Image (cartoon, rainbow, N blue to C red):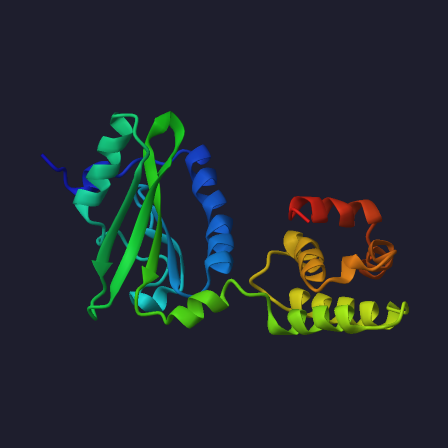
Length: 229
């Protein structure tokens, strides 16, 4: 028999709370990577906790963070728990609708805490109403970076200092002013965009960029390795 949702609420330990908090940054990363077509939701199953700890693009379902526990489908929670008991991945993929009748392809991933208890869920809801052009756009480099790459390819001179300097300044400004990029990842994102723009195809560009960014060549090379460049 399927249990009612409240029966699966658990008392969160400090470790459980840290685990759930660690998923907050993952939500930001997933949202930036997949684009605006996805609603990303972090749920908590903690007793006395708000059911929605974090939500991005919540306008799709008219939900906000810190909602109280009253909205989970008991059958879905029950399914994840049963999967965990059988040693199966606690994942469910399905289709659903919001209150306006819009259809979503959704995935719910169970989050385990201490003692292999189900302490929360990470949900991805893709709106099937999003134009294909918008989906494709989210996987394309920013237009300004593409333009800069063309500038590097088309130049017929060995003097790239000015264009490197301007490219670094432009990309650095865009990244530093973007509040959705966590502070500790900004330099990595700058290097990633410089790589896309073709800057590092120029001789001695790593040293020049490192100097402008106030970091070392080794740090720039490390970021390039991490992004698979």
